[in-house]
Length: 113
Length: 111
Image (cartoon, chains in turn orange, cyan):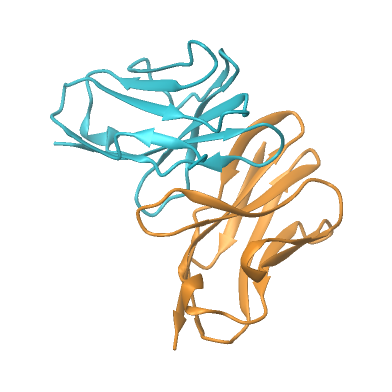
């Protein structure tokens, strides 16, 4: 079975500050890991994905995430927050044997000026 | 626009009525997925197709739910005898390799 846990349902940062959104996974097989962003009343947009290649993954809009097997983590970071980053962020897991994505409960990011 | 499209974007219905949603995937994508998202939660997997074959269905999907992808292109999701608990955002996604691309969703409200 697979699952993800997103620590912190709400994160608030100032514009220009570091963004850190936490995701821990559980998987009995090598995982594929994803971060998606969802703006109000819209679908999900893929930010980045890890599929067993490089452990540091760079995505769109300046976001990146690092796969750490020893910590079962896949935290999302961005060096400098922008107002337009305010949204809901979802971590998800799957694996080579299934396309089904298992999502976390999401983290709402607020960015203050 | 070459993204995933869904129709309608919003649907309000009365309890007991049937509703049908449509999803048009990205044209070269052979895999199509349906998810359901309720307020404050992440999307939950419902079912997925590879071409026209329905390969997996969630145990969450009751007998009132049925999905089709008759020619391996667009898909429909039908809910029969809707209940208030069916109120949610229904999301469609498509993929060819790793990474699913989502449509804007259909928001269903059951009164």
